[in-house]
Length: 110
Image (cartoon, rainbow, N blue to C red; front, side):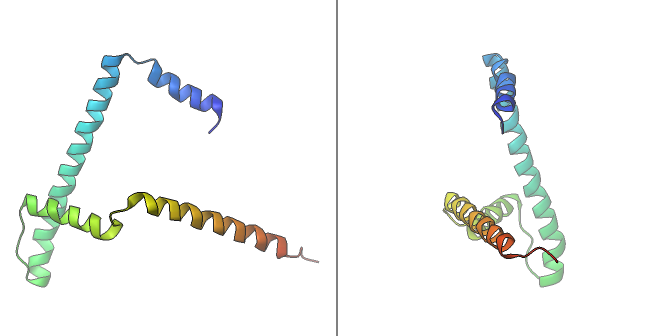
């Protein structure tokens, strides 16, 4: 990101008054809560539609669905979310170095 584009993005936020900034943040919070609620409803509907029929499991209510989503996030992502970003960055750097080495080893076609 260049300094000019960063300045333009900062200017958009800086041009807003404090009440406008507060309303924008509140709007994003409400949007996030709404999306999480919708995700819970969709997951519950899919579970109750598929799992009892396929595997003979019981149906679950909304709060059990939210708990299941939280549990799956913990099991899949783990507790240390920031460590995975660091390891991804290291992996990408290693891949870039490897690709540059491979480009240097390749001989141009004769």
